[in-house]
Amino acid sequence: MNKGAEQPDVKLKDTKEAEELGRLLGVIAHEIKNPLSTIKVNLRLIDEELADTAGQCKPPGLGDYGERLGRARRKLAIIEKETTRLEQILDGFLRYADRTQPKLAPVDLNVLAADLFDFYIPQAVRHSITMRQCLDKVPLWCVADSGMLKQAMLNLFINAQQALAAGGELMLRTGRRGGFAEIQVSDTGRGISPERLAHIFEPYQSSRPDGAGLGLATVKKIVDAHNGTISVVSEPGKGTAFTICLPLCEGAT
Image (cartoon, rainbow, N blue to C red; front, side):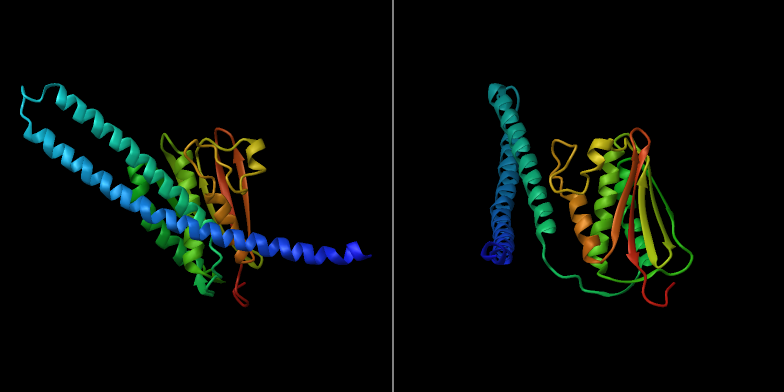
């Protein structure tokens, strides 16, 4: 009996320790971002100085010195690229670890989806992706945090873009099913294997060598915070569809 009585205290302690660890990691991530930004700025300044130096040395006087300057600039470019990747990893972690409660207000998901669709079109064009949308004809009012939902949808767009390396279609749909509004983001990309599909929303699950694996985990966390659900259907070689379901406001059905 005594051991049984101690279990709730142990669980409470574990929960508090996990929360404290998460908070501490968030602080560390923020602290790391600051020097990373400084490093990036100084890398660019060094590269500009090297470029100016190379420009002042006219052939044939440049010789081997010019080759060394070129190699140095290429190495700086590699360092800057890796620094940018570290920043992206930290940004992903901070979004995932964010414990901010949703700021709830009535939101028409059609308006939110249309805004994000228009916002993402230039990015899609740069990657030779054709975007299509099919929005419900009736407003889909939900009580939600519009900023968080936009972040979730943006993550799904980025995920689709990464699956469409050779171009293809990215489709956005909204609709309703019973008392729920649906947002579906689908693509005609490479699809997801069945063994990966079972773990797709777990943190640090990425098929890309340079991926942090927090994008879809963050989407799941945001949807859960809105008392919603997210599902995925995928077929290797044919594409993937993510569907978010959120409760409609009372009287909106």
